[in-house]
Length: 174
Image (tube, rainbow, N blue to C red; front, side):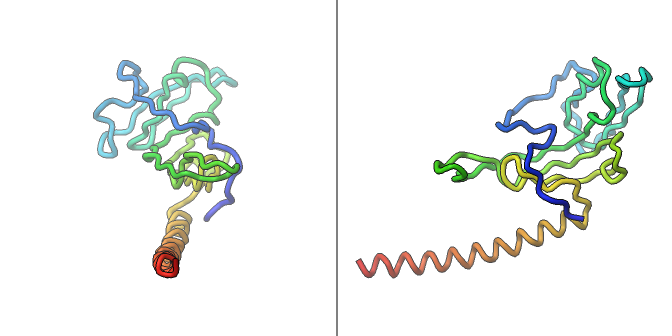
């Protein structure tokens, strides 16, 4: 099911895109061979509340750096596996001046200790425009978003044709 757009950045996202490479020496960082075909990483952390060591199996392809989770006691609800997509930016005029903002980014997520059972299963979050998210999409919900965007692309393509005609008429009338 499609959930509402959130007015805040996803917990793992910063307001400005930052590129970072995994730290190969870290036992919890993905290795160069980490890919959707490789085995999921297994690791453990100390629950900050109970003091118990909890085991985690990342979802296949997880590119989250869990080194801080391993190194220090952590809140289980903060454990978040994800696979990021490449960012695409467009000039968005939100405050009177065009500014480069991420659009249509997506992350494949799994929160193994989330209160919501639905978030414990792999799901997708779509960043429609920088810091505005549709979160917790299951396969049907993501298909709905894709269908809606596909319909909007048809509309934009028609508008492009109308713009070309209007510009040609405008140039001819000058």
